Length: 126
Image (cartoon, rainbow, N blue to C red):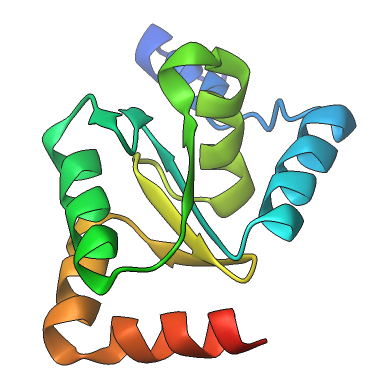
């Protein structure tokens, strides 16, 4: 019996290939080490370029905590690389103390439960 491959199968498998270079991994590692709270997002904290990124910025601004952002729209390598790094397919991505927390929905949920403030306070105290 001959194997059957459809074009769809081949294309969907191509998207799963890990293309992250060691240099890109090092770059992301460095960004995470340098920033206690870091958001990979579309746009920046002064001008978010999508609603989900804006939600994250508004929540962190409400908490009144310092945070930095990386604009994935200005760096296609980071835009794809961060998805591979976290194994999370969407942007924005929030990291606290180098640990991937989640995206907009998860941040909203943690904020509403009061858990986000705790995580942020612990991170900033360390």
